[in-house]
Image 1: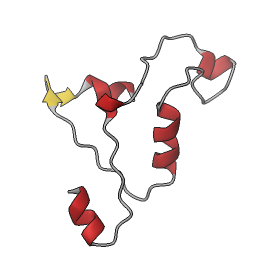
Image 2: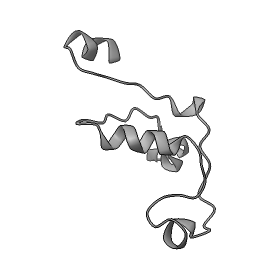
Image 3: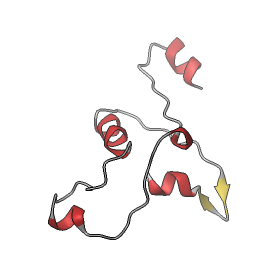
Length: 76
């Protein structure tokens, strides 16, 4: 799919979440108290969010597990 989008002159990027360091939410409420709206855990999610904010279109490709998307996508 990425190759086809690039053939159409789209500026397309692929991020494979399994290859990235992404921590689970610990429920510390740091994103409410210490840095409102921003997670205090520094991991690859910061980069993902920056990419998403500057995107016109986002396509998620994930296996369906028990009727929902994968846990890797949920924690991102």
